[in-house]
Image (cartoon, rainbow, N blue to C red; front, side, top):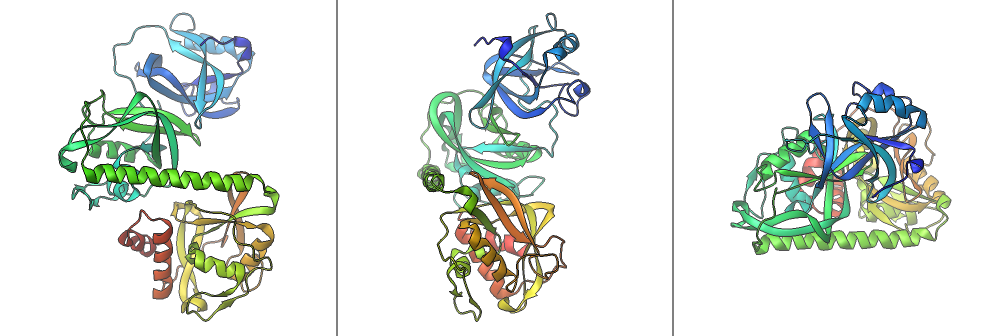
Length: 463
């Protein structure tokens, strides 16, 4: 597609002009717009710099900066425009369809090399989204590729990644292509397993896990990095400035029917994703009629992940056979929506709660990276103060409190603030006692259903 240069105020860069690279000083004062993906081109390693050429089956991920026309002569000179490279206008994308027009330098000469299917300056610790579409749609199955261990449905033992840190986030997306079954997998009774054909035009449901680049390569190795298995890395998108990749074979296989166990696993996960997605859409429809300034997403990461327990803070009463009676909120309206919410911080146990037999209880250390399971409840702001008071012996958060002295805004969802309670400074760690421990295990297991009992206990125990 041809575009007029007068429409262009941006430049898409993919090599030495990127942040951290040797020529980035030419753009260091420009506004960074984020990472974007350029479909229909492949990137090649030319030694000390890369070049891109048209290739319908590939995509390139790079950075976009605002650009003034006065900068073009210097950039053209640096890139050898008209000889080594040609400057063209292309449409680049991110976040499932958002796009803009940008200048791109296209390499002028032929290249006899394999495409580079990664960001030019990627490091092992950089985060990427790994988009899964087969049995790894199931989080318990995927966890074996991270932590190692035997997966119960096929009896295979996996080595796991060198870095066994859990994925820090996950989401669901639908991408164009085709998921089909092919090859003959010894892990699944010699039957077919899922592959992705990027030339297809179906809607393919994918679960995305946010992991490091090193973990992504380790998982590809466990899946089989040969051309016949999962040797091809496909760039699909950019979400929150992180590249989205999936893996598949270098060529399309003949169809081979999967085993019943495998197909039932995949189909069950797709049904669940569609159901969850439908519930989110219904919640968004309800939210669409609200005055957003009147509501807040309150994230619980301790035993209040159990809706039964949290509702004591809303409507009052006792939790099961425990002695404490909660006053509830003045406004006893039920939460309008509820969703799982993973927090990228470390959870730990501190203080000694008389409610829980002197047990340490959950706090969030927002200065330390980690992965904490949470549940977000959509409540009214006038209820939030009452919830905070019930967590703090009748007082609102303040720096003089022993318990939850800080109400933190940690993001937004659909235009509504997401908040949680914690202590601003890390407290001394204390031991967790049985009643709190098993209630928290139950809360994790009920909300994060892909975790079995053992995984939920390991999570709670390892804080």
